[in-house]
Length: 283
Ligand SMILES: [Zn+2]
Image (cartoon, rainbow, N blue to C red):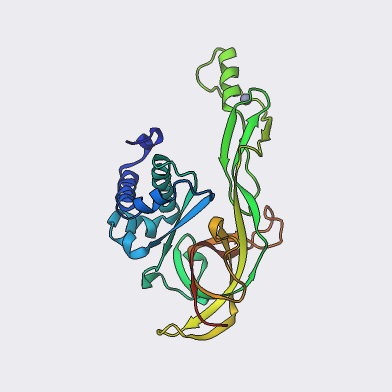
């Protein structure tokens, strides 16, 4: 049954949701049922890319808008978790990407931003884990109304410009239905609720290009071709420094590290890691 906010979705997104429901019910329902009573917090599902490609809507969505692809997939997974009374949070990890996604670090450019790529690397360094606010919940000090705002990692936190509820009340008091140009919304007085906000655990990783033969033998490691990446949730604490892996992710453009991000215009490429496949071979 479509949920309330689904009515606003365009036909394309509805098709993606339908495809996700087919994939999940056909291949993952049993796995989900087995999670009943599991005390864990997060469960990562590794889904082979060729399975995604069995559904044209999913194949296209993964390619063109991987962020939305994952959001809609998580929505469908959560529905199934709720139905089966599984209290964990599902995470989708697409693995074994088609060769068309295989890239080398030295070929990545700014124009690759928001594209999915798959690279083989040696992991040089891993930061301690830290949390960041993914969705900040702000409470209006006057009316106590809550507003949720999505945040971006490594950017300044965004808060609402004004409180809609207080503004509507003000207009009502003035007996005006439409927003007149002369009336400004009341100055915002928000406080962030740390209790209601959503946090994500992440680790920064430093990686460099590792080249493997077709037989899967490590040929060499290039210390010059370096890149940073961010792993989250169930991958936090799972990676080992010095190990080799195929890392699949979305290319992002991030502020230059260790700078005040509001003023500095320099940017570097980084990888929002979607999945990690550990490879054999000591580097
Ligand atoms: Zn208010």
